[in-house]
Each structure stands twice: as C-alpha cells, then as structure tokens.
Length: 158
Image 1: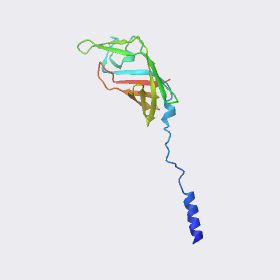
Image 2 (image 1 turned 120 degrees about the horizontal axis):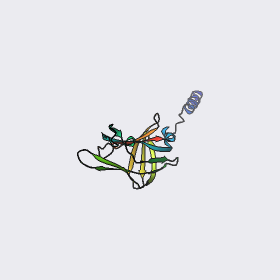
Image 3 (image 1 turned 30 degrees about the horizontal axis):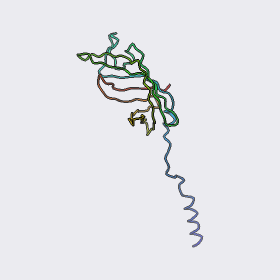
Image 4 (image 1 turned 90 degrees about the vertical axis):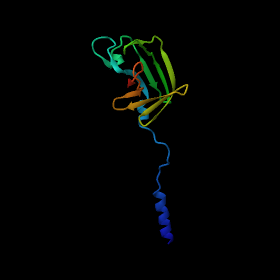
C-alpha cells in the first residue's frame, strides 16, 4: 500500500503544470514598436480638393500643402507624435477649404496593446485607439465623422 501511495505521489508531482498563470506576452507588442508615418487621411463625402476632375476620400492625394504626421512607439511603452494639422473650413453647399497648419504639434504619453488594438494615452488622459495590422503594417484610427470632420487616419510603418 505504501508503494502505491508513493507511486501516486510521484505521479502527481510530475504531472503538475508549469503554467504559473502569469501574463502572456502579446506577439504584436514588439511589432508596433517603431516609427509610423501618416499615409492616408480619409474624409466623407469624397471631394475634388485640387479641382482636377477626380474626387477622392484620401485628402493626402488631393491637397497641395504638405501635411505630416509621425508617431514613434518606443519599447518602454512611451510614444511621441510630431506633425501638423489639417484645417477644414466649411464654405457653403457642401464645399470646404482644406489647409495645412503651419504649426507643428508635438504630443506624447504612454501606450499599451491588447490583441490588435493599440491605445495611446496622452498627458491629459485622453486615449486614442488604433487598429494594428501586422500584414499591412498599418495603424488605423477610425474617427468616423463626416466633413468637416475626418473618417480615419492611417499610419504606415517606416
């Protein structure tokens, strides 16, 4: 009987899981670290901003000024943004004026990622959500507003 009890104890000892229940690392964490450049800024409805006869929803392919945006995601869970803003002014009858701000905007804060959702928290606590695509190497912030608001901003990894 003692041999059976010892055998059972040895079996129980070696059959225990080594899973400590600790957190697992998100494989996307390392993939989002890096520099991301603004590659698309979408609006709705489509506009022919440069009046070449072709309307589009991507403002960057239509505007004549230089609009920049760069997000740097650091390994220490901090982020920084530098770029200028698009100023959209309503005229009348569904027409708008699009201008690039001359002022450079700099922001920063902390970030985390859960699944493929990247959360950027700035110094005031405002959180901006981006969907991360490892296939397309893009970060997409769906804003979802019609003009004079924006639909989305897309950043591509440099």
